Image (cartoon, rainbow, N blue to C red; front, side, top):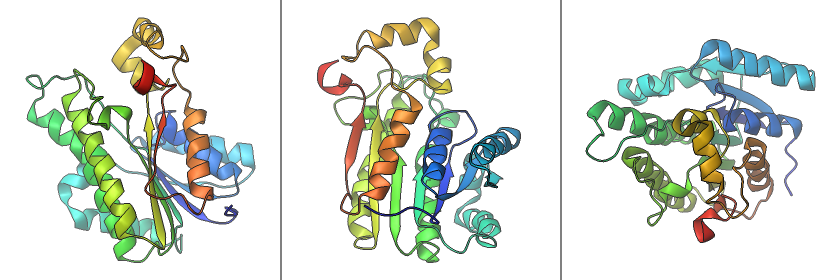
Length: 255
């Protein structure tokens, strides 16, 4: 297994008290020097302070609106990352956990919903990764993309057309990237099912989450730290690449 102590990781989507936060904390507990990216400045700073206090270290963070940067184009990603490269010599781990989901069927999906969903869920990881690899800021290591079980062809989210399409795109892209970036950079995808996050709160509400649990063989929603533990395993194991790991309480196969 790979010793993670002293390695640098870039983690997106840390500002909402969700998977990104849990992933960053778990990596930091392994001795990784994490760099946190989140949309909301005050929340991102708060997460950095919380993790730093628990581990008695300083945590580097930056606030960034990935949708806006995506609209501005590839050069905007370069300019943004330059502000981090000034203080971080290289990274060995990149985890893209930022995401957006809206309840909208095909006929209800307006251009703004479609564009913002793909900007954050697809374009941001695509062009961030392109910039990171092209400039050789990462020359070896591992990329972990957070997909979703609804991105699998037979398990789309009815009522979440753009989100399901975006996660299907991430799944295919990750597969292709694992081949193209080998042998020095590994690429893996985690496919969470229903996870107890602020996103689930806004989409389902308390009653909806309770009903959702009845359709999951393990009879509960997953927890963010259960996703984070899988990320750590995918990062530490040097022979896992091109993997798609479902973390869904067996819902896909039995729900």
